[in-house]
Image (cartoon, rainbow, N blue to C red; front, side):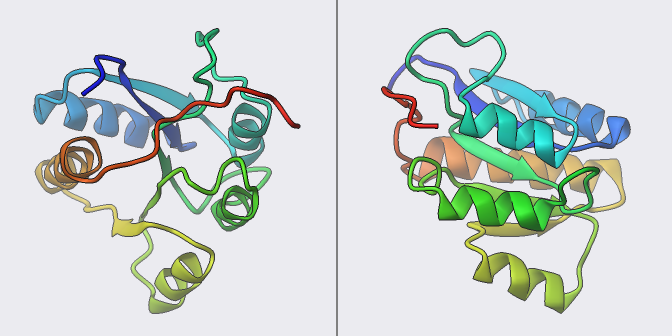
Length: 155
C-alpha cells in the first residue's frame, strides 16, 4: 500500500459539520488522510475539473474520495454528483453523499446519478463520528479504489 495520504474532498458549506467530520476522522484514529474542503458546489467542481486541489503540485490532483452534501450554495449536490459521474476523467472517484436528508426520493435520485453510497448525517455527535469512521475505514482499508492521479489536464 502506498504511503501517499488518502485524499478526501469534503464538499460542505456548514462549518459545524466540517468540524464534526474532521473530529470524527481524528476520533476514529484515521491517520494518513488529507481533507480538502470546498464550501459550495462551484468551488468543488473548480477543484475537480481543473485539478486545482490546494497544496498538491504533483501529477496526483484528484481526491480518492468525495464526501458530498446535497444542500449547497451556488451549485447543489445533485448537480455536482451528476457532473462528476458524467465526466470520463472524474467518474471513477467514489462519491459518498453525506446529508441530513433521509427522504427516499433523495436516496433514489442520488443512486441514479451514480452515488457510490448515501449516508444520512446522524444528529448526535457520537453516532456521526462512528458513521464517518466506518465510512473512512471502508473506503481506505476495505474497498479498492483507483489511484487518484491525473497525468494530463484535458479541461
